[in-house]
Length: 343
Length: 169
Image 1 (cartoon, rainbow over the protein chains, first blue to last red):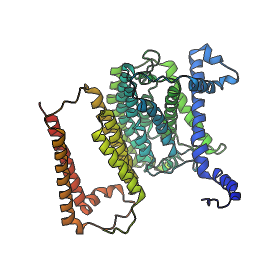
Image 2 (cartoon, rainbow over the protein chains, first blue to last red):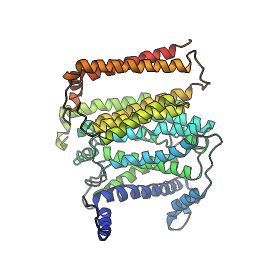
Image 3 (cartoon, chains in turn red, yellow):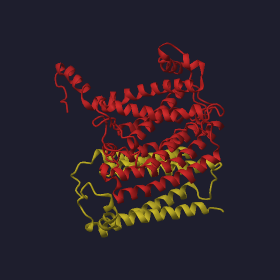
Image 4 (tube, rainbow over the protein chains, first blue to last red):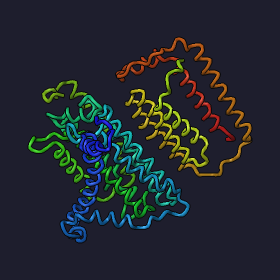
C-alpha cells in the first residue's frame, strides 16, 4: 500500500510507486488491458495468415511487409474512420451500448485467469463459477443487440445464436465438473496447482473433448458457425453493425476466443506448468496459442454442420459423454488409481 | 434495532439500484427494457450476496437468474407476437388501489411476523466461511421465519402468474 502524497514534491514518487506496484502492472499491463489488446490484434493477424496458408489465399498470404504484422493496425484505423450507420428506427442506446458491454464481459473473466503463480489479478475462490457467470451473459446480450438493430436478418441470427449458445453451455458446464472433482476446488489457481504432476487432459480426456467442441460452438466457429455464417448469411446477428461498432464486436469475439483458449489451458493443459527454462507466463501463452490454433484450423478445413446435426450432437452425444465422464472420474478417484500423481 | 449505527454505504447503493431496477422492470412500456431492468435487479441481488461474504451464491445468482431466467424471458418476449397491450376492464385507479392493498397486506404480515417472531431471531450474523454442505441445515434451522416469508412470496408470485395467464381465455 502506498501512502497518498501530501506535498507537491511527493507526487512524482507517488506516481512511480503506483505504476510499478504489482497490482497496477497486473491490471494494466499483464495479464490486464494492454496484454489483452495486443493478443487480440495478434490473433486476428494469426488467423488470417494461418487460413491463407491452409487455403492458399494469395492476398492475405503476401500482404504487406514484415509478414503483414501492420495489417491489424491498418484495419483498426480504417474501421475507426468509417461512418457508423445506425439503422432506421433502431434502438439507439442499446445498439451503441451492447457492443461495449460485450467487450467488457469478454475482458472481465481475465481477472481470475492465472497466467502464472503470481500473475493473476484476483485469486477468487469461486473463479470457475465467476467465468461461467460472466460468460452466460453473452447470449442474452447478443439477442438484445440483434433486436436493437431493427432488422430481420440480425434478429434471426440472434435467435439462432442464443439457441446454440444456451444449448452448448450445458455440456460445457458438466464437462468441467470432473476437473473440479479432480482438483477439489473451484479456484483456478488451485486447479492449476493440482496439475503439477499430471495435466487433467489425462484422467479427464473425454471432458477435454466435450469442452473443446462445446467451446467451438460457443464461439460460433466453423463447423458451428450457423448463427453468423459469414459467407452466406451476411454475418448473422451483427449484420447491421458498421465502422467502430463492428470493430468493437470483432474485438469482443476475439477476446472470447482467447478466453476459451486460456480456459482450456487452465482446466486441462496444466496452465503455467512446464520445464523451468522458460518463465511461467510464457508456457501459458504458448499453450493458449496451440489451443487457439486448434480452434482456428477447422475454419479452413471443414464445412458447416446442418442444424439438425448441431442439435443432435449437442443433446445426444456431448451431454451423454460429459455425464459419463463424471462417473468415470468418480470411479478413478474412489479406486485411488490416481494417487500416484497426488490426486 | 440500534439506529446509532451509520448506514452501510454499499448496502444503500445496492438497495437503491436493486429497487429502482425492479420498479423499472414493472413500469417500462417496452418489454425488452423491462427484461434488462430485471437483469440489473438480479445483479444487484448478487451484489448483496457478495457483501454478505457468499460469493458462491452470488455467482450462481448471476449464472442462473441473469444467464438463464432472463434469457427465458427474452425468448418469450421475442417469440410471442407483439400486439398492442389490450386494455383490460380495470382502470388505472383501481390498479393503483389494488397495488396499495397488496403493499399494505404485505407490510402488515411482515410486521406481524416480525413482532411475533422478532425476539427469537438471532441478532448476530452467522460467522463467515460456512461450508456449502451446511447451507441447507443452517437456513432451515436458524432462519425459519425469513424462509417462510420467502415461501409466501413465491406462492404469491405463482398465484399471480396463474391469474395473469388465465385472463379471458
